[in-house]
Image (cartoon, rainbow, N blue to C red; front, side, top):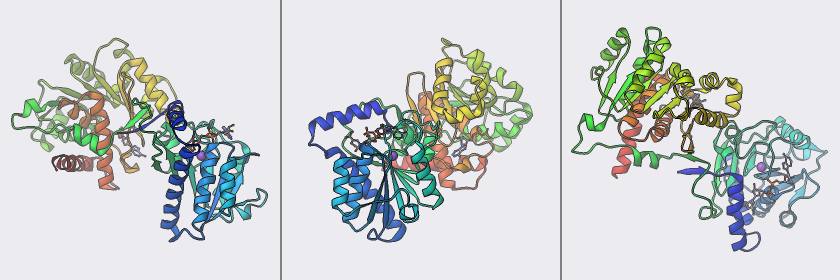
Length: 478
Ligand SMILES: NC(=O)C1=CN([C@@H]2O[C@H](COP(=O)(O)OP(=O)(O)OC[C@H]3O[C@@H](n4cnc5c(N)ncnc54)[C@H](O)[C@@H]3O)[C@@H](O)[C@H]2O)[C@@H](O)CC1
Ligand SMILES: Nc1ncnc2c1ncn2[C@@H]1O[C@H](COP(=O)(O)OP(=O)(O)O)[C@@H](O)[C@H]1O
Ligand SMILES: [K+]
């Protein structure tokens, strides 16, 4: 599992290594890793590093130091390197190294000598020492670079984002790529900051052994999902594999019932039950002859397209005392059904708009602070929350947080959330803990979208999800 750590934890881990190793060793690792990524990107873009024009936008701290040493490495290999200092003092040894390698200062008053000159710029204004926002000089510098179409590679983090929350309350750099050191930061994974990072490269500087195990946020990877998927054994039959129930769709939204069942059908459970509107039931049976009616289940998916019937459906599902995926029209009923101490095993699966209604917040504020709001809902309702978005979050009442990095924007298509709700419930029915099922469902759903590429509609997802699961299980068997 990939993970992100808080700045305080990164600093503590760095301190241990700094005490152990020779002066500058850690920064040398970071700078070399940075330089190698920059050189590789330049080589891919223009064929060769020699002659490439690299601008370093440098602040006062060690973030600037990383860039100056990286600039020296690049200059020694034939790149033309200039630095633009945004602070009176910059990292002394880094600057000396760059000067010795032939780097030159850019004149801030002459943008033709930097914005009009550079093939690529490194943002090394601030890293984990930064507060959100950009001072006006930095803001003007990056606006000028953007106006000249110069791509930016951020050092550790795009300057101006909030490292520990992923929030971007103020001006910040928008990078084409970010080279981050030692471990991910929340900002390199969680939106909206993750969007400002572009492609993220993680450089190993040896922090792994000194970082705390309990990360701030984790990312499920293919191997984690593959290892957790429940593959039936010879002794299993349909009931031991798990039965998933769907109470979704309504006369108003019949398709949601069908799509939720379709998601449930590819979640590796042994049987799918559907309970709902007669016309929807008929359509579900027509599409999925194997689906049966009411009876015992090991997990429910409730609420997708549920309309006015969502509350009654949720109450009926809760009465069974099994894990429940609470989607769409059912989410709002968390308000009174899930007061602290309720004791149900539940995951809410809202998008930002639904979470905003539940929390009496603005949708824009949920989008600006998704992790904050997901955690607020978890605290208020003692449920797991899966907050859908480009970077879907799963936050549990036990204090774990995961962010999903699979998927593509084509997933923003009507009914795609219905498929996800059914899928998560089915995975839970196979015996997986509900939070794990939520994280794995988001991963499979996003990975299926990547396989499809796009454009696609929600009805294309289930088959792709099954193919992704099949490929993962084949990997485990290898
Ligand atoms: N501790 C270490 O040995 C290592 C640190 N590394 C690098 O060092 C960085 C952290 O360095 P620092 O602790 O020196 O901090 P930074 O370089 O991130 O920033 C600190 C400086 O920026 C100023 N500042 C803060 N917010 C600002 C803003 N919004 N606009 C303009 N200036 C602002 C501060 O007053 C301070 O002078 C990491 O992000 C990483 O790039 C790496 O070299 C790895 C090793
Ligand atoms: N820009 C995006 N990039 C990746 N995934 C996205 C994006 N926008 C939406 N999604 C995903 O698409 C799905 C949409 O679900 P939802 O909003 O509930 O749609 P519906 O209610 O129509 O089913 C969610 O899984 C969400 O994470
Ligand atoms: K930076």
